[in-house]
Amino acid sequence: MPKLIVSIDGVVIKEVQLTKDRTTLGRRPYNDIVIDNLAISGEHALFQVTGKQVYLEDLNSTNGSYVNGKVVKKQLLQNGDAIEVGKYQIKFVDLSANEATGTIAPPISAAGATTPAALAGQASSSTPPVPVERHAAIKVLSGIAAGREVALTKVVTTLGKPGVAIAAITRQNDGFVIHHVEGAQTPTLNGELLSAVPLTLKDGDLIELAGTQMQFSAG
Image 1: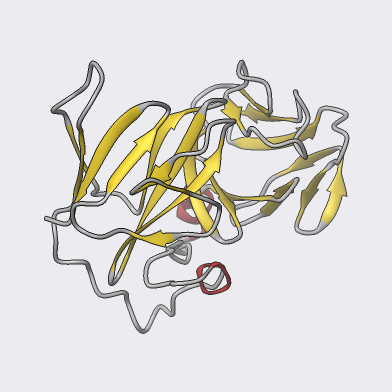
Image 2 (image 1 turned 135 degrees about the vertical axis):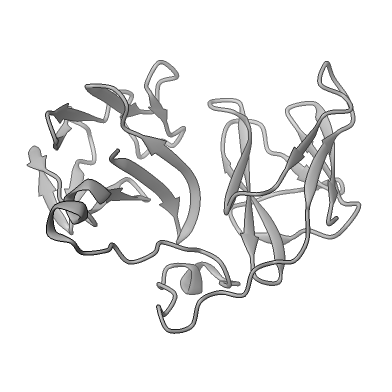
């Protein structure tokens, strides 16, 4: 099944499976993919699935949609295509295309990077990342979900609600980092406002997101 990997400054913030015939992207909350950023139009772009083909169509956005560095109005996507909308990068992945040719797509991983510039690079296939031997989790301390724990088993785990506040926790070789992704309300880490710059999480760190308090456990 084709999917989109959305990132900013090399930091992956979400993955979206294209399960519907039409998947919309834009700043407004009714879109399937919501990116709350002024560089993104309210209704920015559309991903149209036709059979085994996926087309990207720009919906007359203010800043345009780009595929592999070229502005497009409507474009048939190929596995590995790099899409840009505003300051966001979207990688199109369609493994079914490789099954037909017997090839294997290169791995997409942010593990092991410690800076946005490093995160933008791809890990060498000859030197696989060393797994993090820990079972980290986020425990909710307040609100109706108090007591619930969310295991951090994915490369990227997003917390929050689109349009309000979203933070992303990224798994790396040497631990976990957190940064603010989008939303009018800015999350805090131990009382300090988060930004787009990833900060390292330590055992016991307190996160507050849209009025909900959470605690990071390194396991």
